Length: 223
Image (cartoon, rainbow, N blue to C red; front, side):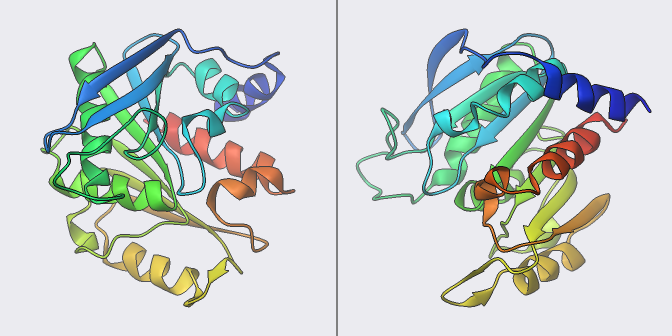
């Protein structure tokens, strides 16, 4: 009942959230991440966008996360906006360091817990970041249509894998690869399979939007 009430209240929160602060911080491989901070408190949440998006892509979901009590850090990955990687790396190489730097920024600025929502490319970066993280740095992971090619049993924290049943790319359906990650990952873990074929953040533009947001909030609210 509490989680349902929290979800309904989040949906009823009027207006769109406005970033309270724009910040930047360095990564361990010499990159610089630019991000927007929303909300306050000691429950941190990193939003790691998909490959076709930027940090601004979470605008419509932001009121729900804020109403649930999170201090939210929405990042631009290297190569997006003003964020950049080191000159020694090209493109998206090292994106996991962007996520890990965001987690550590929240920890250094007062967060007692940190969760991550990573979509597609951002979800892989989040999973890889959790493998590299120290125990306890990352508490929860929402991996939205994402998996890691590294050993999934090394992913740390409580995990929620989410994918649409018919989501596919040129290599075929994504579900089998995500299910394989889920089966090898250590618990606690959950796998949520939604109807349709929309990929990652595009699910928020479908009739699965409300269920998707509800399940994410439920997972993040678990003790």
